[in-house]
Image (cartoon, rainbow, N blue to C red):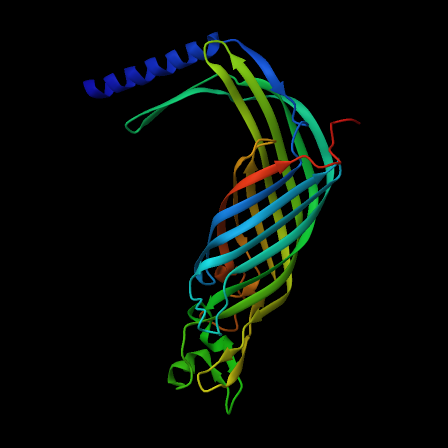
Length: 334
């Protein structure tokens, strides 16, 4: 009991000390202009990872570019290729490596700023499992710029596909002397392998919320502190008119057309992108959702699958970006 009281007393004392320090500081604003930015960025991503129900996982590298043209237009490009795709073998022509590319264009309908308090961290210390953060209580007033746009685009992708995630009775191999179902493949002497290939072409559309903060202050007794961010949050709907499973070629040279009877042509996704407004540095992107593709197996083959469990995925990308200022640049004029 005494030990618990001691811990509570220490925690309360640390809390009070933190707030006393935070309340007593003064500062001078050095920079607070969310329009003084580099409106183009090119990121080289040495590593991305994607986990999905389609094949399990993929790792690789890629590149991203983003350009905000003046007040009303923004464009984006993303490309990724795998160097560690589960189920893909260069020696196996029936499989496909992970590859993804997309282009997008957006129309900005809201591009304004507003004064709002943002957090400023003065110091952080870690002792054991405890991290102590000292910040300015209530934050510091900053000019926060918000840019909202409607966007749309096209993507193409390929990936390996695990046959075990498909419904046996819905998968048919057509070709050669006779057709056969996936569930009968084990008895087919010419069938070997658990992975195939998948490809899709899709269009997407949605809304993007961008937040830009560029605050730099000089705090008495603490030095320079900042809150700088250039972040995007987006939500898209997806429609894929093209969803294909790669033909399967057996060791004897027979080519089978792989058909799956239940395809979902619609999907969705949401994601976050982070970088700084004009300094070169680190960038990150996280995205998850449900892509169009073969629907998940169910006990009753005639049943409708409301959720496509096979095509849930999550992607995490890390990279280094180079920001540039390319005209036209919107400075906040009416």
